Image (cartoon, rainbow, N blue to C red; front, side, top):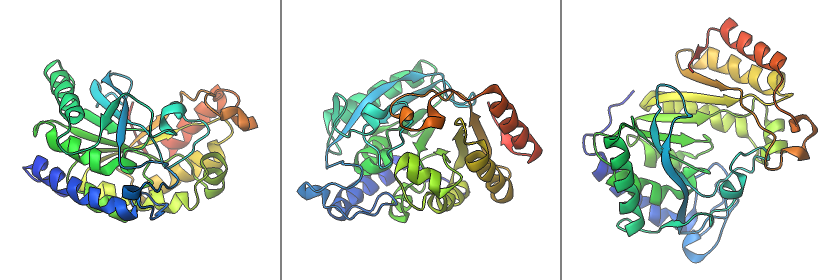
Length: 288
């Protein structure tokens, strides 16, 4: 694991400026659509130059070792998960009231001030999430540049970023909380409209584990213990055996879940028992 540079603010600011220039041929996520966002073109995420935030507050519902934390959620995402619990905002990059559009804009300073206040009130870190923050790297990095150097910064991601995104993010965040949603590409294609999902996420997780503290999240979904959780768990046990794993069981059939018959209910107690038993049998490093 590489050490974070002492002057994270300088590194993040330089990376933000570079990321802004890369919007002319956007390659931030694994779709690598090449949209010229500076000229109004959009790709699967539908995002342009402007970034918006739909949520910012102190939260206690994350992993116990992270909470309480101050969460800042960017609108828009490159995946289309039908079960998304913030689908209205995550699918719409124009949702939200706080507009962020430049390195020194008032919106960034406001969020940085709110985050610092939360730290002074006892928050243990600052999490940048979405939607998916990777699609808004210029603004996300500009925000990181304004946050206190001593703060524990957490990057919450769907782990569907590209190599370009990895280069821009390296050394900026202390903790990565990364989703590993699907164990098979067929499920990812059907439920989130994304190809080659598994290979992309695995590559990003291996990289993240080398350069930051990594927590891998998996949301148990009804009917997906064997097709999704089992291969995810086996891969983690074989490739990242010491990595912290957050196995979450609070699935709720919201947003467009009812498009899929198996997602029209919560996860059964039997599925939950089987999933956690599998995790323990593989020796996964489960955390609450």
